[in-house]
Length: 184
Ligand SMILES: CC(C)(COP(=O)(O)OP(=O)(O)OC[C@H]1O[C@@H](n2cnc3c(N)ncnc32)[C@H](O)[C@@H]1OP(=O)(O)O)[C@@H](O)C(=O)NCCC(=O)NCCS
Image 1 (tube, protein in one colour):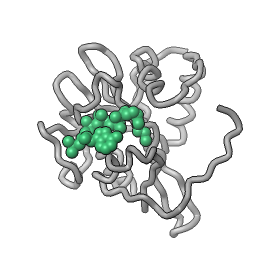
Image 2 (cartoon, helix red, strand yellow):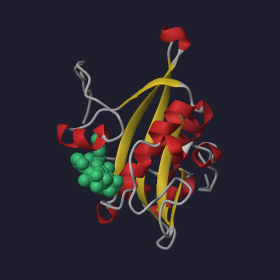
Image 3 (cartoon, rainbow, N blue to C red):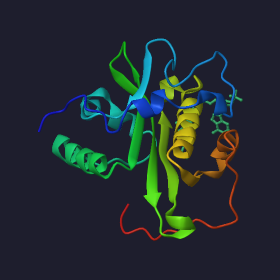
Image 4 (cartoon, rainbow, N blue to C red):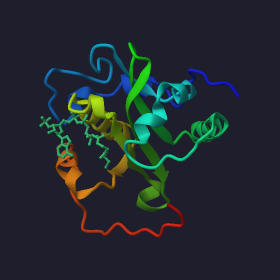
């Protein structure tokens, strides 16, 4: 199994977003096509396995001991469904992933067979925080969920991060988040 540059989803989806609908301000100005000097915002590819993708994710949660084979299998599954939009920011000078966030599109029978977006795994590597990359990823995936005709987009976050997400028009719901964990 070989790692390569095949994108998880069509890069055009990110390039063609209507950035004028973005709800937050960026100073200095950045955008999906110009995320900052030496940076590129793009879909995940399997070659990112060796560009520190997991090192960024492990700053958010436990990632486990994932082999290259497991990673490629999971990537192929996600690509086949067409509903996973794992987006990364790469520092081209370092050849390293410095930030990532994921949009998942869920299909419903309700709301006229609608689609709902979920944003997950938003993380910026600690040395790159405060450079607007978290804001950029959130803006991009929120706009992408709209472009993909989701009737709503949701996310779960720690209470300390609520003010961050409010910037993009998210508001706390009165529904409780319930879970039953089967392992750590
Ligand atoms: C939360 C996180 C993604 C933010 O990314 P970032 O690149 O550091 O933030 P940005 O530079 O894009 O954001 C800057 C803006 O958000 C604000 N901000 C950043 N983190 C914030 C937080 N936790 N709460 C409130 N505001 C926050 C900044 O004050 C700044 O505001 P401004 O634009 O009005 O000046 C990042 O800190 C991170 O990866 N944290 C660890 C993982 C995590 O908690 N992920 C979220 C899971 S729910």
